[in-house]
Length: 127
Picture 1 (tube, rainbow, N blue to C red):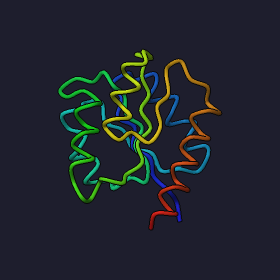
Picture 2: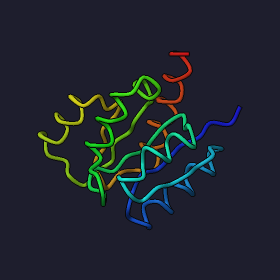
Picture 3: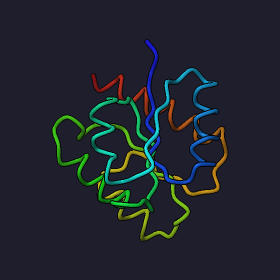
């Protein structure tokens, strides 16, 4: 069964490069560029993994993550947070909010792809 990834990122170049990378690896990929609309998009798509930026218009990635973790349907949804803000404070906030993985930009394609694959396997093991 094909696995899906939703990219919540407002930078078009990053969305384009991640989409190319993930589709080439066999994933179905969707994207949303606004934190305000992220939860509705997640509910519609029901992705296996979410890649979430921190700095988004509407709501921050931290706000989106907190909302995901507060709903039974998405409490265990694997989330890879990608951010240019790599301070330890941001990592701690993400971990407290329940992020599955935290990665700073710039990132390597291999690193992202391996993280997504690991999170898909984690999700399958939870079911």
